[in-house]
Length: 527
Image 1 (cartoon, helix red, strand yellow):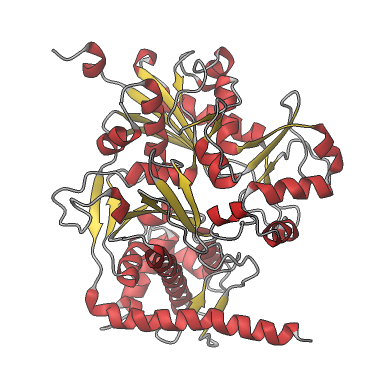
Image 2 (cartoon, rainbow, N blue to C red):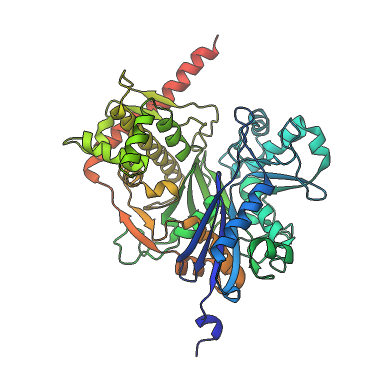
């Protein structure tokens, strides 16, 4: 006879801290999002390449959205809480009070964001050491990791450096706020702090219960029961991977059916994009982070490719165009988002052509914020080839399309590097904000030549965070069991193989663009 624990309705709370907002969801044991809330958080950009946030502002937003999603729910049915967040650096003093990460001495601005590139000279110095640990980050450390940021603080903010009590990755800061325990997640320390030692008492696998659960103060802040299980956290992209990569694919006629999970790549696409592939043995991929053991799925090695600006790049290109006010007005008049309107406009102007073929003479290199993978060159710049004097909505729609294609071509570049090193990838699993855009999804299917799986729950990152809470509660025997039970497929987008030759040619041009950029930079550097 089933136990009461198995038959009772149980809920889990997932909290996701993104770049611009905090979200929370109430999720049941089948991975269904029952309630969802979102609140913006502040970002300061005091100078180019400097991006800062406030840990107090972030925690306040976590409390607000969590209270909202559990309002009216029987507290006894909420079994666990999981956090994910961007891999930003939180700095506090010995009394856990915020410390300034800026020359203005503004202590409330105590978070250096993941996308902050202030430590360019520091990461160059670190990479010049050719230390063996760099083999585990694709051969070169990224400016987005924590060691160069630590070195920047030491060299530029000696007063803050002397006062520091704790440096936290943001996901670990959240689990500390909830439990009062300074234990770190294996995900954060391995992926962002070059941790390679055996697991110690203060390093927990994602989904392990932290301390004695939610403290009385945190319970009051969050509107949750005192003592409920709090999980060791994940970086946001890894939570997205957890929410989609383990889903049951039976009956969808996919090449990954009856194949190990190692044949899949989870792509988490929002402000930036991450490409998560797992393997049973370590695979060293030049220009791709990892291999990281048990950083996402326990017992498997993780490789993580990425693009530093994807959603942010699309917004930058569209909103910066002279025709954007016209687009905004027409989209509002039709009661559609600007991107839904642009997709419809492309269908109008394509005539008899496939929509992707409209960019035969327009090409974009998408590294407006440097290249994370597979070239690991933060000095690379964006490029657009094929501009005309046109200033209208048609031109805006075309540059929007070419930008999406460039992002998809960048994904193909990353996948080819992973496959050349030994990964056998057959299927893409997409989640995140950009996965809601059908043009973005179809271009990724067509350009990579691989089917794209979309999850039933659009908010896969929140489901991933809730999976952590479910594991910490003890309701599932393992992360893998929870992934299979709570991750659900929504629909599958197949590539149009008739378009393969066109996109093969686009890819040739794509690779020529960076080649030419390096050539002209070499010429100018010879001055």
